[in-house]
Length: 343
Image 1 (cartoon, rainbow, N blue to C red):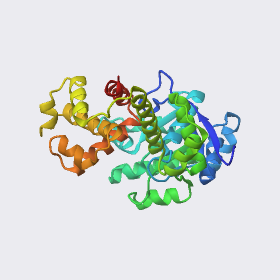
Image 2: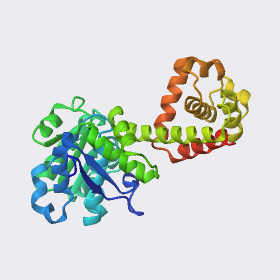
Image 3: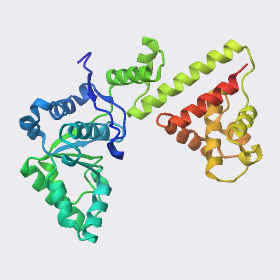
Image 4: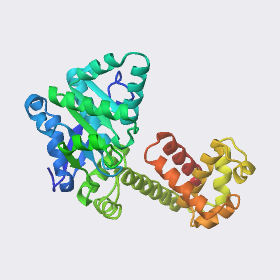
């Protein structure tokens, strides 16, 4: 622990592990606001203590708003146990997938086999319980499954944004669980998360920049990474424009360059057509216009086919979400920015 912040490494994906685990090795960063989560996580990630110590937090329920790390933790635990005991010993489901596989097993006359496979698990992870379909058969089966597994010593990890959509029987089961309410990271934790993200992306930031960004960016982890990406793009752009001594980029230039880049016509971009390729390109134009010009949302809308400012704001929010998570969008924006700011 450094300055009240604990960093716990989580295992990354293996090449032969299925879709739910396809994530790189990373860490969970917790400030004092999430110290209870650290205690539970350390118990579940220490091999020498699994047999005796894990039972005190069984079932473990991770709850809290979107973006606080519920899935990040649950999948890290699942990967760790998969490496220890093999894929057959670990069951990972979203609530919707659990319901689908349960119905498929019943329809195919394989319900007994499905129950046998689940009963043989050493770890069961079910995510997003609030999305469990409200069907009596599914709810009853999950209740019975939880009862059976906890009684036999299987560790159960559940995630839920809230419990209100669940039926009374499931809420009763969870009343006696070890419930960890995850909070959004405080300033110290946000600074550490930003520091790690900057290192992984090769971004060099001064201490005052890190601290300032951490203090003014409140919210979930994806928002922090998005703010870091935008700061990096803006900083690089400002440096290149200043070094080139050139006039600021215009919206017309952005539209023209984006049209060539995506093999579209400028007329199509300014039209009312809603093809997926056009919508995406327009969102990229909006993002670049906000980054490279001083135009307001209303001015961008007028220049982009007389669109309403609310449409432009929605486009900006949509592309911002992609910036933090989608490598292709990041590369496109970086390449377009370089083209537009080239001497």
